[in-house]
Length: 219
Image 1 (cartoon, rainbow, N blue to C red):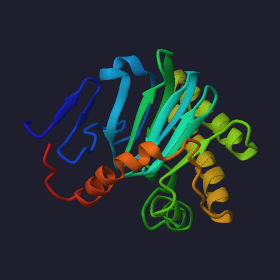
Image 2 (image 1 turned 135 degrees about the vertical axis):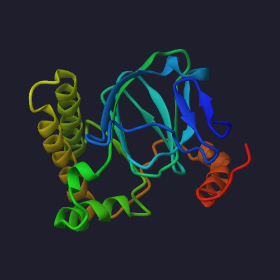
Image 3 (image 1 turned 90 degrees about the vertical axis):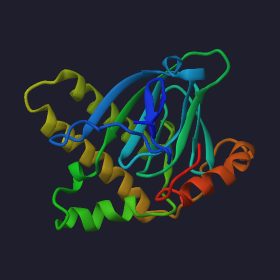
């Protein structure tokens, strides 16, 4: 396909949407153990996708640009990235960067679209213009709880024990409950922990991409 841009471990279309199947149609959840050095130039390129992505850094430190914010993610911390949020990741200097990724379709939490779960808990999060990403810091109690829930899902996926899909669905529901409870009770603020110089330099590009999601993008 001439419209697909292949960048080592990630394939993008003309609009920078990742061309990747999140798990399978029967179980739309994927868990990976990633090494940033397996990507070209030791960075994950700008991209977006129509599913939720969560990261947990277990070795090294990384810089994540998500939306118009920039974060330095240390060992033991992570980030929640909402659907359709454009993002990019790179390591710091020559240090290693290893991290876990959980990608999932929120339908695993909501069930059928007519269910209460979709309208009361899932839609307010995925439809929020403010909640494009949430950095997760183990020093903050509710975020530490969410990171522990993340690691439980990761271990369940690795185990492939009988019923692990049901247990993962339960784990993702607990993650969603922790996140949505915080979101629905607290105002959104800019959580960026790095001055926005990089975000400022890319702001025009981000705005252009967001405007062009449904249109042809010149590469």
